[in-house]
Length: 259
Image (cartoon, rainbow, N blue to C red):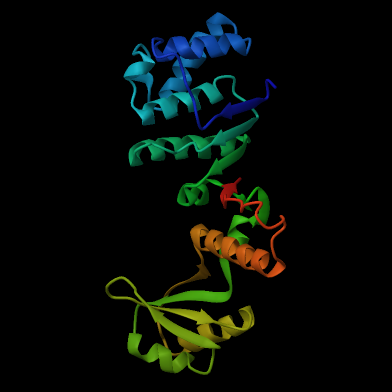
């Protein structure tokens, strides 16, 4: 248990305690010696942006500050495995950046993070792998970069001879779709059979002295993946029929993403 940290979604710390005193009590529960505990408390409060609030009572904290205090409590004993339930819920945008950067540093240091969250953009910026749940069952899971990459689609950006590109690529790729691009550039989504076809198309542009500014895989957002997975599962359940006898009542949909 000493190797595991946990940040609950619902937390009720004694309102009359200061932030540092609250963490001191949790440190004692973890068996952290008093001398080491004082230094560690100072470190984790600074990490979550509450250093100057260490001697203020928890009752005076905003919801976002209490959320960051909960994260400090989970980090207090420097765990190897960290479970976080809605870690960014109720925090303002600046606070989310602080939390996100802390989680990234922990991940880089080798800490395993298991995050339960409905804030899919935050999950997308922190996690390597995800699992999508509906009614307590995993309906889609995998490596995030693989789940979000659209198969055989690439975004091409060019910086010269913009009007010539569609004609040059008309027979070189399966499909070409123009999309918005920054001023001075033009961009298209290309659908190709494989990478060889993509490289052949790029070679054609280079032979015509077209300045290619960038080429990258087209990706779906995690939100799009989530909605698609829940929709597909709902359709499958409707086709299979109810699992419970008529009149038993339907279960609510609970879609979550975990890392």
